[in-house]
Image 1 (cartoon, rainbow over the protein chains, first blue to last red):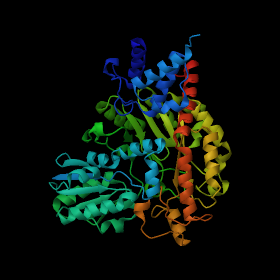
Image 2: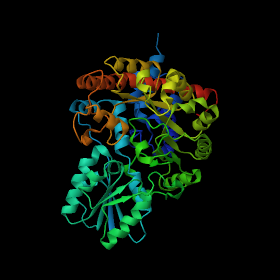
Image 3: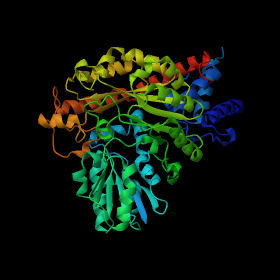
Image 4: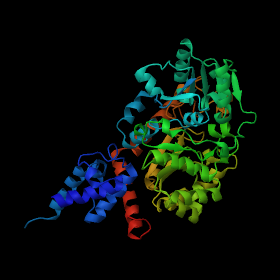
Length: 84
Length: 440
């Protein structure tokens, strides 16, 4: 799902004030990209608004890389689409 | 002449149980890392008043631990706060044994100059900007005097402060830098060492503060700045000017203030647009008996009934409040801990800090507890960590106080509570974005 990953990467880059191409998918927001905890919450809020979802509260602490967020979004989308 | 200026940063909690608990609590670990990584603003400021012909070597005590004593210097300057005083003295003794003269200054030496003198060739008592050039001149001549004191303590004109030499730092080692805009606090609470050291409340001119911030920005593109103040927004006209200037810069920052910011919608609006991420506010206690007489004008007692409303007002602007509570005040009982836990959770405080009442040397609290025979031991400075009990509480045992602190750490800093706080902030932020009050 490359578009989703690019979308997330773009929002993360905006928070980190860097070029999206410089955001490694496994880079830690705080340690590698300098996104502090509050900026991280703004990022998660922006992601929820962008994708129209609400991440489970218990997962918020783990949303610290692009790949982790994408995995959570994909899981959420899979949960939302149920074949009958 | 080459001078090593050494920062005694970092505090180790003495309680083994608390230290062990700390490694698993997200809120505690995060704040601990932040504090541990901050450079010494005092030393950077002294470096800035050092004559150009004197070479400065900035060292953190961690550098000494890692690489050993740096002995290719002619003089050592050490700045320490109380919890690190003994480690500072040990380091000073080692340097003097190596034949290198030592000057000790900073908060603890100012409170306990005679004690510091036993480990130093000279002690800088009070604010160092005016004294340090004299010390260097005497050191160069080989005639260091035992004490250097301000003629009128607390009278240093902050408009004369130089820009700290931030360029001496390896910026990559720090996640925030400090800027001081004021010294002291007019509330003058009984436990406060800053009010004792700094005397009357003074502010630095706004344009001067901005020059310091611009100096940091020149070194660090997206800095996070922590104001090294005790109470930033006492002077409201100054605060407005400062916040307008900050609003024109794209900087994230944090400071300590009091609840009066919630009374002033204009000021709060400026604060919200200034890049301020969080304000740390000393709520101290929920018990009227504790607040009664705590500060000179009983200001905090008068605010108690408005705590929740003020917290809501500030946080609704997207500024998180770090509400601070002191445990072990004289009206506290074993029931206090659950009351604080319930308040923190119910009020949706986005951050909270609980620390133990600590009688720092030479404060009013120290003298009172000493007179009442309630200090557990003499010269307990390495236990002045804010997390180790040094006195006999009035209405509970030492063990009950220690257990109460641990209880609150477990209750307030666990993952579930932390996630709930995060969710609350995210919803505030989404609402602000949706109504156009902040740009998403």
